[in-house]
Image (cartoon, rainbow, N blue to C red; front, side, top):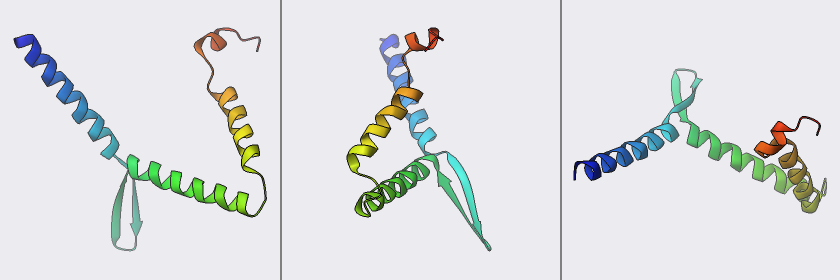
Length: 92
């Protein structure tokens, strides 16, 4: 019974830690006499919004096609995110 209670407590603490991590302060913005704290979650969402708006504008203005973006994203993924086996083989 104690093992079940301890496991439940551990899971609850893990959940609290994940919630705390998303609410940690990433930066403070100071404008005049006002200060605002920005969490990592807010920063991530803001970056995502700006990136999506930028991509939409570039596609709308025909700077590039959405297919070109997807192809480039796949190339970046291959370059950045390699499997553990790829890391061991330095000849690539």
